[in-house]
Length: 502
Image (cartoon, one colour):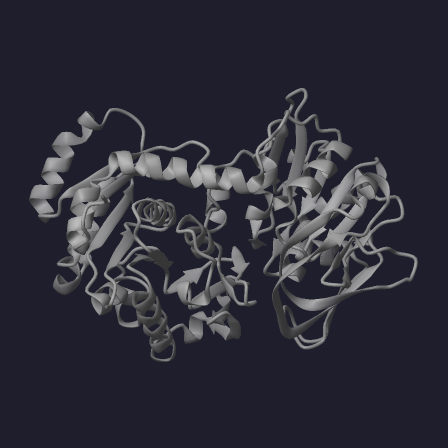
């Protein structure tokens, strides 16, 4: 039997679609429904690696976890990873499949069969598939090449929920305008509206809700309140725009500054740090906001050479070196580690002009050569370093995943690897232990490693703190509780033909 599909689209990007889908996945799982998430095409540099070494969007991996599932490539068959203003890498069924540019943006004929095959597979194996759209479904210039919004809803004949963000203003106009722009067959599939991120008394909205329902004929299914500290990994870096980049002056708080590259990738690496009591994580894009943190992190990036040049233009490279000279600690992850080395070469033009060579920050005796081969794998191992703040971590078990293009090697034998992963050395640590780098994403989800490093940096931890896994599960349950209390779930189940939970 083919499972029903529930489609969740939004009036715009970043209105909360991915969080709503995450909540629905947890709710239906709690109610005994075997549910799976799906997004036909994701555009994000936040990615994850499946157990079989394939790459998908981080949001779909998070939604899978909420549903109690391991991530799989069918949940996100097409992933676009922006690496320039007009160019994205295509990841098709978990593997790189060339570049997509504004000049050749329409590849629907090639990609659509992969979308339908993936969705059909999930529908055959689960009781329900909750599908997330992308951006807005009401873009007349994109109708003909749509593979992620109403084209999916039409293919599955899926009842569709339209989500709007009231916090940004104009939500009722967004609802009416979106529905007015949809073709009749697509508009007929929209069976309910949901207001997200509301602060205040819902009774104040009643006149506007009545008006919109009369104008559109589409009922309001729920008003989801603003949720502080959701604790769920965000889909892309737009979420960072709500953050505060100023330096912290709070006493007793361990300050961690993450350099906010223009093309930052996998920034959810730092969610477990931010969740620790007494730790503050700031995303910094200016020298004047850097302050004097206990740790500076250079995170992953989809465009290492371009973001290294950005650092130099802003003087952040000199600021990072000055931090080290003053006795501060620096950690580079993936592209950030590549920048910390002595030299970066791109002989095949993978990231920049063919034959490009750039000097790194010179803080680690490493050199990186970019190549077209992409490494995507889950790994496990232990901390190999025994210097500086890393001394207490030696032998600590870690696991995570790698996503990178290029190979990084030492330029001298007098440098130790930071980690040993699957029996192979990874990264490096400086002779004084102040600077370290690794290709491992997810390092900070390892509770023992994270907390031992934080203590070495001066953190005073809380007694018997929760594990990252426990916090994640609690966040899913808390999110589900809020959405369950403000969404008309009986009506949603009715749209899907699902019985009430026993």
